[in-house]
Length: 281
Image 1 (cartoon, one colour):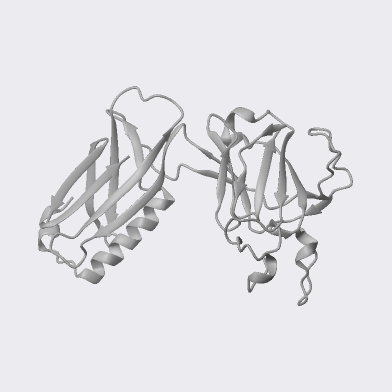
Image 2: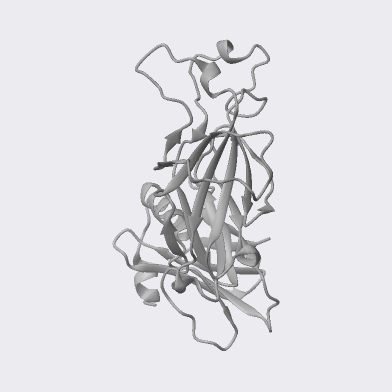
């Protein structure tokens, strides 16, 4: 790194904040972060492999209370594409009673060969209002709330072929966001029909990866302004030794501004009067 350039460069507050925003987006993408065992050469590039699951869903309508788990015939189900609503909607006069029930979605899928040796997850970007999912007959934790995405790890539940993902979607008015008024559906000024209201995807990650990355500008109007970076390490296997955590903060002209390398759990570096820090918890 050209330290003379850094010493001569003067960052305005606006440039500093813009740099922080760009760094936060880059960290979330994961392309500049790596957790590498000490003494090994880090690999570059995105760690995540993604496979869209928006096509070829089967919609079974209302759940049959007498049906037994694992014995539900889907030959009469309707093929749908996400996003999908459990009720047909017109331009006006929506009837909330049409989605106040429990509905079943199913997706048959295979695991792409590129996912071999990786940890496999399924992500839903939004399901209204709560979800009970199962994979190959194994139930997964209930998710409540229609606005936030949620993820399940499927690694230990998958078969080499013929995987089945079932979603029981509860579209009834519930005391969870974005609903919750004790006065019921007529108390809200908008309707939230049940269904898988956003996209879904299957993705694979390495056995150890960084998650929940957050870059926070601190004291941006002071000479002690800095960026604090917090993240979690999701590890399915034990580390064989100390690991290095590396981060790059990119200047708007894509000139490397700061490079931090240190042993976890923390690293701290001060250059050109600006302090940059990383934290892991």
